[in-house]
Amino acid sequence: MKKEFFTSLGLMSGTSMDGVDISLIKSDGYDEYISILDDYYEFNYELRQNLINLRDKIFTLEDLKKNSLELADFERKFTLFIGQIVKKIQKNYDKKIDLIGFHGQTIFHNPEQKISKQVGDGELLSQVLGKTVINDFRQQDILNGGQGAPLTPIFHKLISKFLEKKHKLILPFNIINIGGIANITKIYKENNSKIENLQAFDIAPGNCLIDEWIRKNSDNKFDKNGQIAKSGKVNDLILNQALDNFDIQKYDKSLDIKNFDISFAKGLSLEDGCATITKFTAHLIAKGIEFVNNLDKKISTNTFVCGGGRKNTFLIDSINENLVQSNFELEDLDLYGFNGDFIESQAFGYLAIRSFLKLPISFPKTTRCKSAVTGGKINKIFQ
Image (tube, rainbow, N blue to C red; front, side, top):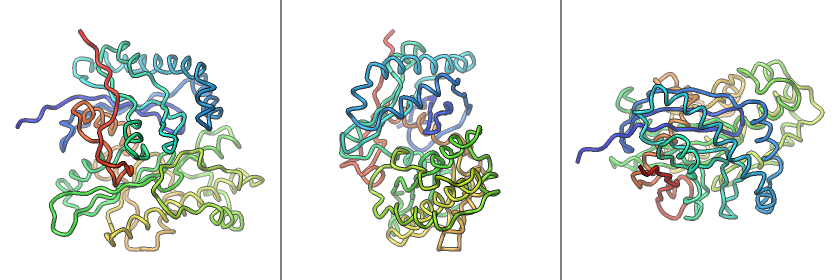
């Protein structure tokens, strides 16, 4: 049977709340895809501050309900802002765009209470753009017993096919995304099977603690290339105390930036605090990698990294130093023809296609859901 190809626009705004990544891809929703466009649009100051203020008000389900009117008002403004951005892209690509995958901005995530709330109105965006928009990707997984994250592993599996075919690399692979939260996907085959399997976990903070420290203690938004951390000195006493106080034994839960804080570095200079927090982050990421590598003893020497954190050389070097298995280091996915800044936005373009085709986007070994499940709310324009 001939597969139908769709051109899909993926929109992803992450925990940094700085802006939105936009990717246009063409795919059959299975094992083929072409990247057409990747771009980034920064949020204006007012929008970003409103986002941060809302996030900082909502820690519980009760908070979510209490701020519902303010949230609804902001959601409309946020969606219209996104619509203005997409209209710029439509000028050149409108006839090519079949679907839009709109992740939205996560404002509250609590799988135990069966809710993951992303700011972003898919129905309104669909009306504004005159396109079919898929949003609310996480809720169906949560209702099926899953953690609602990570959702990118099925796209990582697609990437692995290119690594195998084009670059002749051999499974198993690990693909690590270091965004606000660090997550890892392991792609492997059982014994002599031809079927590729997936395992995935949120493993640690990614950039979130480093970014928060920089923003609270300087006029910068992040530690570019790890330069601030490199100029500081790690406080080993504080680092070891922090590691003793925060230790992930099981990787069966999704992580949120609200699971972590930077209070342990209070009193340190900008540089020393950044160095100490970066080392803390690196230790937890390395521990997560080792956990995944030790599952079924399928150790992968092909471990690729994407996301903004890959550019922080102090962080990457620190992760490599922490890895007990010294026969491999993290490799930048960019070296293999991918743009590591836009893997997640490309993924949500791909997930939109799978959702439209009613294909599963999450699996028991990626989100701990009861069974493979599709997801996303489809908002169609009826002519």
